[in-house]
Image (cartoon, rainbow, N blue to C red; front, side, top):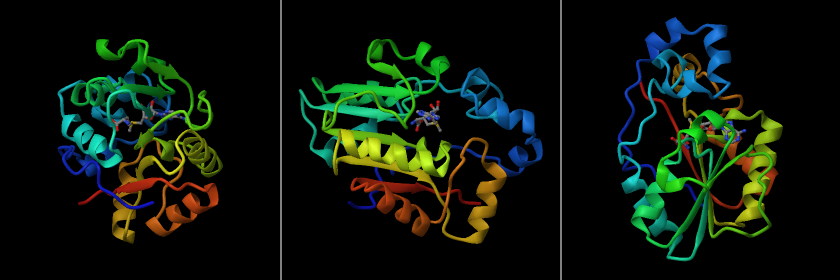
Length: 219
Ligand SMILES: C[S@@+](CC[C@H](N)C(=O)[O-])C[C@H]1O[C@@H](n2cnc3c(N)ncnc32)[C@H](O)[C@@H]1O
């Protein structure tokens, strides 16, 4: 298990942290946490501010394929796949790879890319409906921090169960109190977040032996 930056070639999102903070209300947070239209395709104060395919995940997909040594016939699962952009790009850069996704949002799944129709499952990271050891790799990018701490541990155990030692999770974290304050101004949906030390304790408690990286907001 290792810290690895598999998203290093993903363009950085523009974030106006001050504007988000000033616009934050309980109603907006509640709407974001439903992971429906407002979160994906509503105004930026509710979430993404428009979640559309633009190919930005292709270099990330290349790095994931290389990192896990995946080839045609292998199976990979993206937990928190949203509209399936990464699932589509994994199959694009590795023809013959069997890529699948799972997400809690029926809004996102109904609007998936046509190349992934039938490959995306509705469900929660805390209960993955697949047999033990059934994937060559499992990813979960910026997703499991949306669960509470106990459910994060359950989700990590589920990921480990499907692909022991062959997973990658990326989660919200901060290295300094200043970064934590910025994060708390920005955050809408994350229920559990921590310093890396805290996250590593959670990984250990869950028996998670895959790889990881942190999403850290910079001023
Ligand atoms: C920040 S988005 C990340 C989407 C995608 N992985 C990416 O990096 O662009 C968080 C995703 O987690 C999904 N999600 C939230 N709670 C979830 C849960 N309990 N189980 C599975 N997916 C969940 C949301 O619907 C959303 O698609």
